[in-house]
Image 1 (tube, one colour):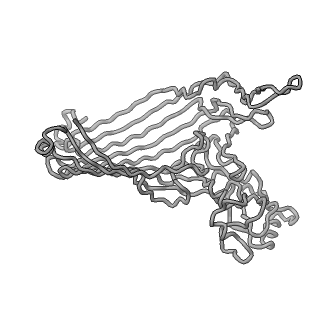
Image 2: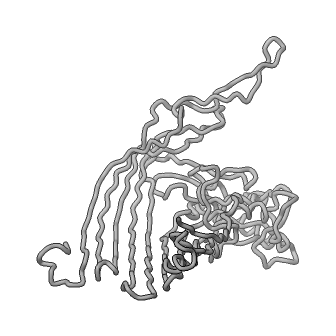
Length: 422
């Protein structure tokens, strides 16, 4: 629009563009032979009293496996002022995915150890992105530019293969023994799914009060509960705690994300700085299940030193007891943490020798010479208690993103170097 005659009076306007697009793309991210039944050779057979190599089917075949199809729509605007020294961009987008590819676990009664890859439903994503930048006026010794971005993203599973279908994931006996995520229509993909808590039972009298909520004190509100155990919330109103009292307790998806990039030069010195962050993303801190749950007689954390006892009741750490009879380590909001963070991802500072200095002192043997020092992952500001608030998927399993099983955190690195050109 900036090129149109009716915009010529806007002298400082150098760009004004409205854009839109629509398209479809197929995702072929399916491994070799994924549609076929899996065969495992991790077994032996006895034939004529001789041990022989055996094999068995460990995964159901799915000959109807197809590509995912994603339909994308976006509308945006780009504006630039002062020969594009000031720029702004905004964009709304929507992605609708059909034939969603996910791992579908088979019921244990079928005898298959591994999940089957299948097209199980549809998913919708939409979001808004903003980007702004400023470049200083050229010609001065001190030059600088800054750019910032902001984005929000929303996700919803629109449909699964059945109206009441759900995919559960994250069940690990070492981390409480319950599923941690659920994917179902109407919710964001792989939402954290479990029980809500409301403190700790302080006495047997308090337990008796909960047992009597249904008018029959002989029916327990929470089987095997004792003073010092976690109180779980009765979501379905049945006056006892069952699997029906689970609900969505968090999401690994952030409310919004943001970033800032700054570059500056003063004569021959230069500086680059990059920060980014997420706000509102949850992490299920599975490491706390190990260190605070009392499931094992080793490798406990210091938090268990503040565990509930009859003389130490002002605490949020339940009693330590062998076997966890109340299942205090079950999936619950006790282990959900706000993992919002701001990370100083990269800093680079250095000096480039002037060309005339190279000519006068090195006789033109080098075309350029400079040195720098840089650091990656230098600082992270977060309230998350684990190793790293930016948790990916363990073993690339996309159904358990945001679960902290103690994955190795990203390292902090500092580099020094030379740039030499001939």
